[in-house]
Length: 80
Image (cartoon, rainbow, N blue to C red; front, side):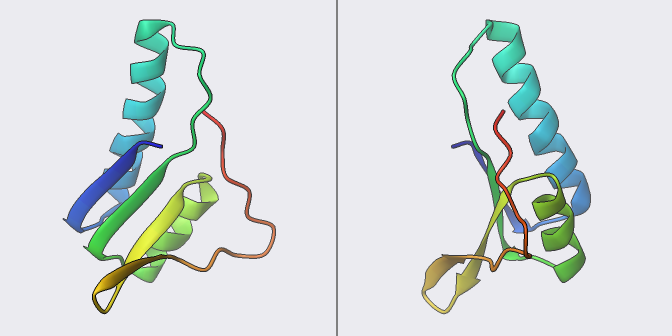
């Protein structure tokens, strides 16, 4: 599971991560199946929704631990 980690997650970071996952696997002819995730010290609600729309898990800080953000109804992780 490739995970993009930022202090403040932005939509562009999500786009970059999606591009990286696809490019990395395609360049190597790697046929493994992956799911992806993004995380940040702060994750705006709009960025969380955007990442989930693309089928990425979103990890968010919760006190001293990290939780998987609640996914919207019908969420399915995308297989890359």
